[in-house]
Length: 154
Image (cartoon, rainbow, N blue to C red; front, side, top):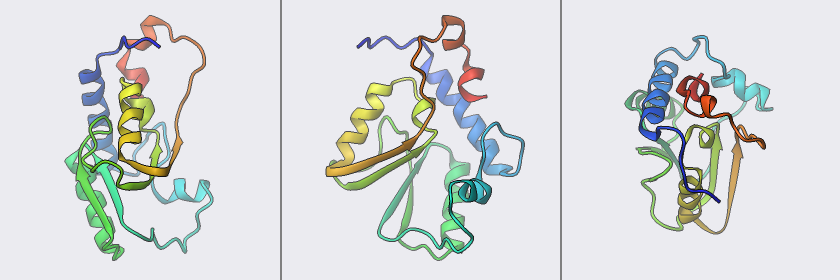
């Protein structure tokens, strides 16, 4: 497998940060993806959803999303939920400490997929589970598309 990265990872990360700052500040804005409770309902959750059990660690790279997430967890009384600043390529979690990694549309926004999966395997305990929903493409991406950051973050 090639280790060449054809997209500017730093520029991509900055574009992703900008997009998710917008989501945090205006969650009902016009986005190409669904957010919040309407998304949860589309995924089969109902209004009786009370939150997770056990310890939960959320990771985000934007202060706006961390602030919003912490505020929401506090309002819901979810004392077992913690949010840490970080990126998926370098998660602030100890080796082998996680039972489940859940990612919804995060991996596709990272230029270094091998690095992301290595990091996920590092933090998962033996027998841990990865659940993710992402965009996958089985065909080569044209060079013009690879270098177009707007197509990655839309």
